[in-house]
Image 1 (cartoon, rainbow, N blue to C red):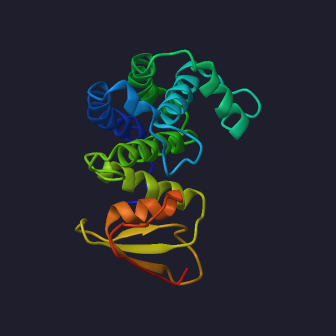
Image 2: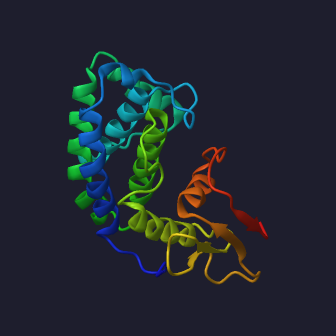
Image 3: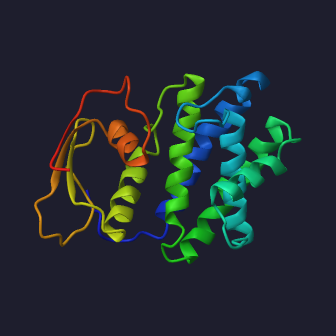
Length: 212
C-alpha cells in the first residue's frame, strides 16, 4: 500500500465517505442515545464527541485558529458553546463541516490532514459507544490507512510494517529512512488503528506487535 506520496484529495474523501455513513446513523438514533458515555474519551458523552468534531471542522472551514486551538481547554469551550443545541443541530453542523472542510484541508498542503483522520477515529468512538458495527473500520478504512501511513511518515514515527489480516498488501508506517529495522504488527486493521489512536483494545481481535 503506497504511503509516501501526499494526496491532497485524501482527507476530504475520507470525511465525505464517513459523512455518508455516520450522519444517517445518527439521525436514526433516539435523543437519549446522545447522552451515552464514551469509553475512548473519558468524561465525554456521544454528544460531547460530536460537538467537538463539528466545532473542529467549522474552525477549519472558517479559518479560526486562535492561540491554543484544539487544546483541552479550547475543546471544552467549543463543547460548552453548544450546550443548548439539540442533537439534531449538532449533527447538522457536523454534516456541513464534513462536506465543506475537504477543499480547505487540501489547500493547506498537508498541515490539516490529521484533523480528518481524527474525525474518522472519533466516529469510531461514537460507533463503539452506541454499539454500532464498524468502529475504526467500515467504508473509510482504506483511505484512513493511507492517511495514517502518510502522517506517521511525515512525523517520523518509529518504522513499522503491518501485515493486516483484512488488507491484501502490507502497510508500511513511520519514518521511511530509519536506520533500524521496522517493528512488525500482525492483526486486523481496526486494532492497528486503535493502537495508534490510543484507544482501548480490550475485546478487540488478537494481534502481535514486536520490536516496538
